Image 1 (cartoon, helix red, strand yellow):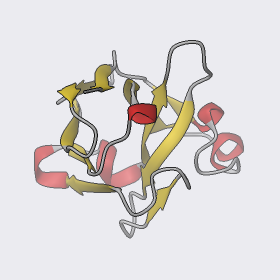
Image 2: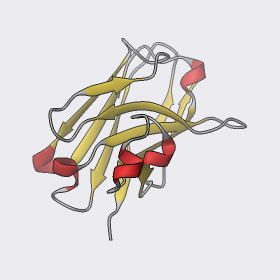
Image 3: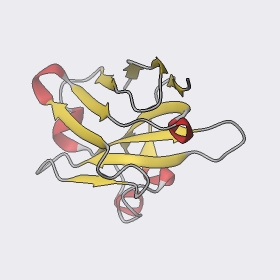
Image 4: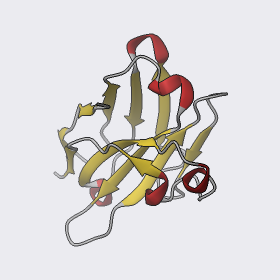
Length: 130
């Protein structure tokens, strides 16, 4: 059973930084599947934030976080990170990580399409407020 566990959320002032971690239960998940970070603010739909490719480490970002967030991974630790800098109140949300589905149909979807992903973690709350 695949499990993804997020950590690192918290309360931070505007302009501050946080680093989120997503640790996978299986050693090979990061070697074979894209891992994505997503977020859901109260009353809003879940949206893609950033994705990292399994093969070449290529990264993808939502326009709203480009230049402020950086996704990275450490395959030896089975962990994907999301470094969040210059945080804004509108970044407040529950942040989730998820693993790409093992399906050609799913993998043909957009890289941040929620339907491309499965095994969502429990989420970690990020609150940006003064």
